[in-house]
Structure formats: C-alpha cells, structure tokens
Image (cartoon, rainbow, N blue to C red; front, side):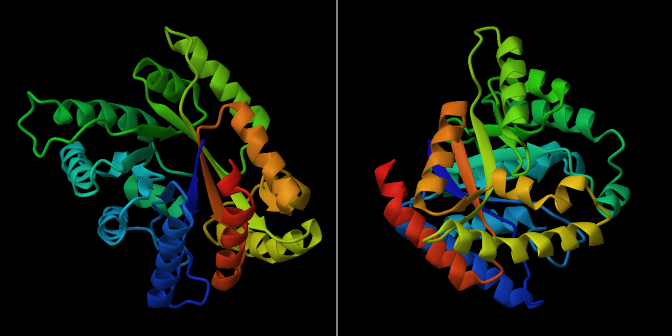
Length: 303
C-alpha cells in the first residue's frame, strides 16, 4: 500500500498567500518523512479550497520535490479540451520523471460550479474525453510530448457506468473520504465483475486523518475541523445527513492513537486499498505537521 496525503489548499485564515505556503510546507514535510505520494483536489468558485488551478499546482509541486509522487484528485475533464489535458499530463509525467498520477472526475455536487460549467452530461463527457486523451498519448498521434512510461490513471466514481469503463481499460478508482467500507466493497465487486480477468482494481482511498497520543485528544482536535468543513460545504449549497453524524465521520476517518490508526490502516489494506491518502483535518497547520510526524515515526516506518 502506498500512503500519502490528500490536500485541498484550505484557506483557514482567509489569507491566500498563507494558505498556499502552509500546504506546501506540509508537502515538503511529507516527502522528508517518507510518505509515498500527495494528491491535490480541483475546486472552483471556492475561496476556502484554493486548488482551482490544478495544473499550475502540479507543476510547482513537481519542481520543488524530488521523490514523492504527485497526483490529481481530480482533474475535472468535462471542462477541458482533451488535447490540452493530454499535453499537460504528458508534460507533467516527463518533468516529474514518471512520478505523476492522473486522477479524473466529472465534478461533485457543487451548485455554482455545475451551473457555470454545464455539468448536465458530465459523466458521458468525462468518459469520452478520457478515451480521447488516451488516444492522443499514443505514438501515432500528432499531439506532443509523449509520456515516459505508463501514467497511472484513476476515476473518482461509484457509478456503475464509470466502474465498468475503468475495469475494461485497467484504470483505477478513487474513493472519497466519507465513503464507507461497504461502499468500497461494492465498487470493488462491480469492478471485478466487469474486468475480464476478474482482477481487483487499484484504489486510492482518501480518509480524514489526525493522530495523537490518545483517542480523546485526536477526536477533540478533529471535531472543530469537521464542523468547519461542514459549514464550508453548506456555503457551497451542499448539505447531507452524514455531515451532522460525528460518529460516522470518526468511524470513516483515521483518527486516534497509534493502535487505532494502525488498525484502520490495516483494515483498509485488507479491504484492497492500494493507495491511502490521509487528509490532515486540524484547523492548525502546526498540529497537522505534528500529527504527520507522529504517524511517520510510529506507523509509516513499520508498514
């Protein structure tokens, strides 16, 4: 299992420069600590999550790191020309010396984003664009540059049509941080049935994360951040019953002491997760750094 981070470029203090600085400090620390990869979201029209220019962020992270893999979670392919995406990901693949992961999505339930970009047929557009992107990366295409080696590709979806598409093309899947283990089990089974070799998929799973010396300490630090996340989602016009179920958030996160976090990581590995992306959830960057350092010292080195 590859273990990395999921970052949203949160603007906790309403200071754009500081938000970018804080997130990049976490990336540099994670490479130093030995994490395998970092995944970045793409969000638009959102002053809290500042990862709208995802290609720019990818290029900057690649230029300032040496070993850690860098992934998109996810590029919203319906809003881009497939040629532009093909050129960009091939370039990122080369600049990173083949340490770029290509994650895509149709776009989440963000009302303003969906209205501005016309996501009515976004699933079909996403899948059509993906096939075009792959065709542009082939040697016989006149689109350049060409990647050096295979670009690992993942689709963020639990939709049957998308899962079948992924299984027939040997593409991985991505699971959101609030998807339960039951949902993940289901998408794995759907994938295996649609894959002619009955092979399990590569699955990147995001999980809210905070580790401390005790479960109570970790939960007490996590809850204010979860509340703030819920408030930000509601500002985007998204409300769900699970946003108000703190037990569900804790159960489907990796939040607690060493024993609790290690148990949950092993459960996800046994479930079939191949890429685990930890989403630091404290409102304070220094506490997130301390939490990651503790995880690296107590768990990462022993996996």
